[in-house]
Amino acid sequence: MNWKYIIPLFVIAVACETAKESEAVIETETSNTEILSVIDPIEGTEEAPRVFKVSAQSSNTIDLGNGGSLEFPENAFVDKNGNPVSGEVDVEWQEFHSLGDIMLSGIPMKYDSAGVQFDLVSGGMFTINASQNGSPVEIAPKKEVGVNVASIQDTPCFNFYEMDEKSGEWKYETTKVGEKIEEEKTEVAQSAGPPDLLDVNLSTRKFPDLAKLDIVGWQVKRKLSDADKSKLKARTTRLRLVETDSLGLTLEVKLSAKRTERYPVEPYTLDQAMKDSKANRQDLQKSIAATRQFEKEMAAGRVIRSISIDNFGTYNWDIINKRDNSLPLFAKFNYPKGVNPQLVSLFLISPEENVIVSYNPAGDSKFSFDPNLKNCLIAILPGNKVVSVPNEGFTTARGLKKGQVCEFTFRETGIKLTSANDIMNHMNVLI
Image (cartoon, rainbow, N blue to C red; front, side, top):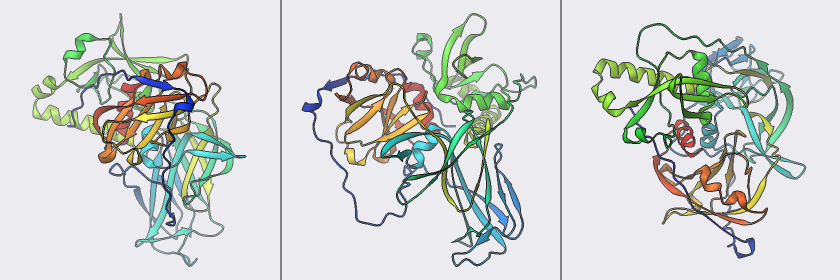
């Protein structure tokens, strides 16, 4: 089992100065080499696409296991020369939903419209390709593939975009309303067995007694239904630990501005884990593996977004993030000693907006954020080491005027990034 310790929140000093005193931003040199794709995933965190075998001649429906599906008509494929394909075809599929997924995917999330650049809020992004015996195949002329994405974003209406993978530009295709899925009623499981264990980091700074414990997870004092898991995994940045008179220590989940749900929990410590029998530890590992697999497959979607495509590639259901209250600043970034900014991947994360924005790690004159919302900065260094700035690190920046210079100082976290789950867990601590 991958034991994780609760990482304490740390306060980061932010030093600010006027724009005229700022140093010039170091521009990254561009190469004359032809770009095959701008998609640049974080090395060492890539997940292999799911591969499905389908008949080229027959119609096929692929069940994605999370409420989504892919629908292929008969005779749907041609080779690079335009000749019909027969036999079996391998369909490669990847979908991206959480902020961690999007960060690690390396897929640009900027959209240009009338000369103005906007950040995109994803309602479900996917990449689909196909091949036969290692050679790429395409969708046959006058044929279309139906793509039904199970989105965790329940806003009904989203725009649909196709990416030009050489330029990174998104091409607007259409706007459609998704079909809402009725959520299952939460039911408390009565069957015997160990309680569910949540592998998430929760801030315990308001509970001094917990600081003495080696906490490796959180036991929910009742069995979780699939609907419960879907809510928790879709909202990992909206979880907090509270104490109530009726339930004691409680995990509170913010579902909307007016709706929250609570789950009674207790810390699961390293000592408890060591005392478990081998059989119990194996059962616990299976429970954690099942929960992680549930998250990986995005559980059951809350909205099905359906579209027909006539070529393979990368697509996105999105809406443009239009902030009512944006504070633009000239941002400078201080990393631990010896770090080359040109080798850093830097992201601003705003969970309440469901937005992740990549910035120039050497400094960025176009940095902006909503000072009324929670934000954090996460930088990925060589070797996938993570340094970050928590929400508290934006306190001084919130008091600045538009266009002023703000200097953010990053601190080490001890985290070596391996998956999107690492990002989501650390984000919980930062926010």
